[in-house]
Image (cartoon, rainbow, N blue to C red; front, side, top):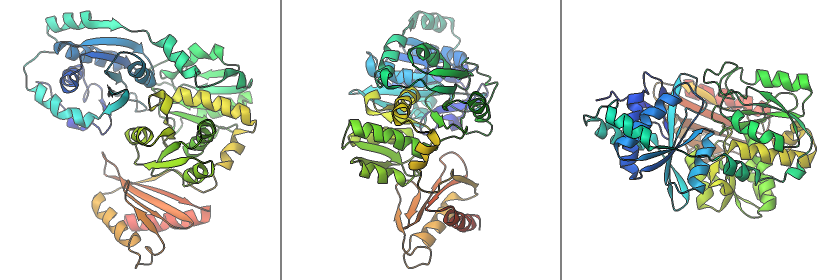
Length: 463
């Protein structure tokens, strides 16, 4: 039996420190359980550039082979390449070996299956029971016969030509201006596709960290981690570039960086994209989650679209798109999803589309972003707390009862945690699924009002 750390099985995927929490033997157990639970034996598998990924691939392949399955290896790719493979080819299930933007010591798995052409995420926590059940069987993951079968069962699958044609189909290259841009691939897998398409783009690209390196030697693979923007900011200013793009480790997240080296908020980026897609697809839906700016529904309504608000998380954005005639959606984390990309997210499609939109507009990025950022909304604030539920109940009591001073004039909803909306400000408090943490988001019409309400809520949470 293999020791299984249940904490690595998350709400959307599987992630753990390699090899103490997520080893080759655990990957073997996951491969077996994946085939048994889905009933699918033809599995497409991709991997990111992390140190752990080749070893986890080997363990997963052995587990799949032990259940009579067959691996189709699409190689070192972006996470969105797996979605493309499942959506466009004769595959019903796939696994991406990645820990996304986590620090270098992590490894992980994102798992999907296709139901009626809808790509569905298989939550890590939903696979846990099958992993534990299978783990009781006395099967040696290093058994020579399993090793031999696994090697025989791996078939190489080249998706690059078709994938590149797919992402380029979203834009008209003739409408992209000869801009000068800096792109930082964070030593993840984004540099692989950027090298393949940059000669097709009529722009000058200054490349940073395009070489995949699982040690992430230049900065964190998380674009919003401290220090991650220093390099691209300096390069934009040094090169007098028009703007830049910053990708995360598996390139499913992308951030727009303005001409001063400042990250553009994802709220504003969602709106930049939404306006373009609603002009092409009048009346369709745009999805954002519960902690996004109130500017998003306001602008979407103004442009004749339908706004769909969901809980935080890729699964909910995807469902919102699929179930509500949505054309695109976005998250504050830099994920942007598109109906015509199998309702899945794509950092590359967002990057290419933004190039075309910005070329058409002609203004500086900071000016475009300012238009779509009419309110004051910094990043969420995290509070480490002993008892999340008690504090949430206290906030509910103080802010949702109209007979109390703080509750008067507010409108509450409980889609994701607690959101209370007033005429000139709103807040959301929600509990982390994995940590003793409460997350607070506040947006106000002015910085002064924000500061006042931030102090007020901090006092309530901390007292």
